[in-house]
Structure formats: C-alpha cells, structure tokens
Length: 404
Length: 82
Ligand SMILES: Cc1ncc(COP(=O)(O)O)c(C=O)c1O
Figure: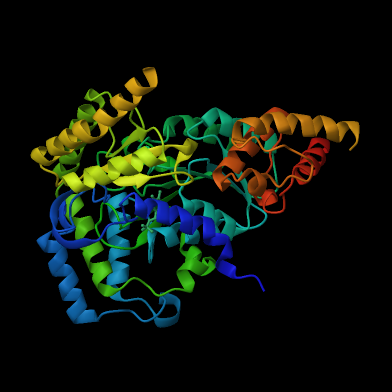
C-alpha cells in the first residue's frame, strides 16, 4: 500500500532547504511586547508582517471586554449556533458590524477562511457560475470548489477580461457571482471597483467583495474598498475577517439582501462548526466600536504606509504595486536570495513575511511588509534602514555582478 | 491523432512552452502538472492562455479531470463545437 505522505517528500526537502538556510517557516514569538514588537530569538524585534493594521491587539477596552466575556460566558461555546443556540454577544457583534457597514444583515463565522467557504457555498450551487479573480485568496478558491458551482477565473484586476468572459458565457440559466478582493494580500493592490461596476451594470451579476485586508482600513467610514470608491450600494455581499484590523479571530459576511439570513442554513461552514468563543466575540465587538470611535487610526495607518512605501521606493526597490497601501511587498530575484535576506532582516531586528510561489502571483518571491497604525515613525524609519543595508545592498550587488 | 488533434496539440505545446522550464519533451500522454513539475497556479495560468487563444471558457471544475495533453485536447475539441 502507498504511504499517503510519500507525495510530500519534495515538500520535506524544501522545508529542509529552508531550515538549512537558517530560517524557520514562521518564527516563534517568545513574548509579545506590543502590537508592533515581540521577542524573537531573544531579540526585541519590530513586527512588520502581522496584518495588525489598526494596532488594536493590546487595547485596554478590547482586553477588558474579552476578560469580562471569559468570566461571564466561559471559555468556549461547545458547539454551533444551529445546534447549541446563539449567545447574546454573537447577536450583539452582528448588529454592531451591520451598523458599522450600514448594511441590514450580518452573519459571523468562526474564521475569515470559513466566512469565504460559508459565503460561496451558501450563495452558489451547482447550477450557478462564479467568476473569480485569478489572484484570489485560497479561501475563495476553496469556497468556490465547495459550492459546486461552475468556476471561471478571469485575469487579475482586468474588468475587460471579465466582460469578455461574461459575454462569452451568456445566459446559463443559473446565477452569476463575481468575487473580488478589496486589497490583494500579496501585492497590496486594490481592485479597480468602478470598472467592475460598469461591467456589473452591463451584465447584471451579483458582486461579492472580500474586504479581508481593507475592512477597517479604507474608506471614509472604514468599511473597505467599496466605501473608499463610494460604491457600497454595488457590493451585494461583503466578507471580512477579524484576524487583521480587528485583532481577534473570526470572520463575517454582510448584505442587504432580504433573503440573506437563510445563508445560515444553506452554509455548512456555518452550521457544522463551533461558533466563535465568547472572548473572541467580545474583543471583536470592542474593536469594531473602537474603530468607529477612533477614525484617526486610519489616518495614522495611511501616513505610516506612505512613509514606508516612499522610503522603500526611494531605495530603488521594486514594489508590488504603485499605490500606497498597508501591504507593501518588495520583489526579489529568486528563492535562495529571498531566504537569505529574510533571515538577515530578522537577525537585524525586523520581522516581515516571506512569500514564495505558488502562494504568490506570477511566481514572485516577495519580502512582504504590513504596516500598522501602531508603528511609530522611528519604527518605520528603522525598517527602511534595515531594508537599505540588507536588501538594497544585495539587489545592487546581484545586479552589478550580473553586469560584470 | 487526427489532423485536428495534431493541430490542437501543436498549439497547446506552443502555449505551454513558457511554463515548461525544464524543457520536458511534450507528448499526448504527458501529464502536464506532474511531468513538467509545475504548480497548480501555473497550470491555471497556462489554461488561461489556452482559453484566450481558442476564445473559449474552460471552467476550473473541468481541470480536476484533465491531466494529460490528450485530455486537454479533448476538452478543447468538445468546447470548440459548442
Ligand atoms: C483575502 C483573504 N481572505 C480571507 C482570509 C482568511 O482570514 P482568516 O485569517 O480570518 O481565516 C485572508 C487571510 O488570511 C485573506 O487574506
């Protein structure tokens, strides 16, 4: 009989190669010092790869809310809301989020990944077609597969390509769902929403926007890309996660659709998993209130993002996209050099993400930074300084070596 | 192979070249992902080139049953007719 894990031998070799280069995939934070600092390998390290956009993870109001919920409601819900019933705090969080988004209905899921599984599978079925952006997050691909719908992939951020495919497909007798992301997690680019809305007017599909990296971050009300673009009314469904700007764990889907509440019963990733724990729910609710109360956090994030973006660009580094975004990815030459630089950055005191194919579009090797409203200017400047010595130096050396 | 199949095979081979970094020799029975050792994203990117060239949609669902060049030729043939 074949050993099931035999097929992972190549993966094991890759892990060993990475380990030999001196890195662990995902280092260990021995102690968190703040939203932007942790002790890693005994060193005080700046965190610039944790998606902690709003820096709320150590906010007193969120911690107190979590502790109170833990004391009052216990450690876990021990089942799904369909089986065990809801806690009042689940419903409070859904009301709070719906109010924040200005939408009628909101359903909370146990993670953002499950929110995408649950939304795609709850909305679309085998007779429907989902058109998804080529650079979509894994949770979107997996949700699409789970739905059983026909899946058509269109070129990244290319509304004309979507238009062509919709025209070619014509009427299928089923529903058409188009899935976009507010900010794409690897390169930090936004979907050109106005262009897609033009195509929507022409073809009349339903639109879902995953605002995982843009909820709380973009727009005058912090609702995400649709808010920034003034097109909230065009997003039929919005998905978000608590694992980034909210600093907790969980996810949500929201809509004004009069039948939206039925998704709770047409969505197995909602029905057949335990509901989020009291502490997660309470910290998420507190964070949503905090983001509503302190819009200046978005200004700080924007200022920090601009500082890092222009700083890195000033070093001559090639970035993932041309607009200022809290996700700032530096393009590198190849996997071995990216690993070396990532290790050197960590040793010098800054943690960023290393992103390699196939997890990246276009086979890119990236050193990916995510900016926080809680970063100080000094921390941003230190990150730029370390990229200057570790990365800019390397890229230039490689270029001059190639030229010689 | 019929003339039509040969023609599609030649075109697919041409479209596959940029992804065939190891320069594996392509035959009808070549398993695209396995033999060329290319990842799932590259396979989808290649299929997008095929869609554009033949002006057709090849839904991702179809790909789970499409492994060899010959499989893909059949998919293209079937979708050209409709
Ligand atoms: C675009 C996108 N959607 C969904 C998710 C899943 O969120 P979560 O971490 O809550 O599972 C992520 C991040 O991991 C993401 O980047």
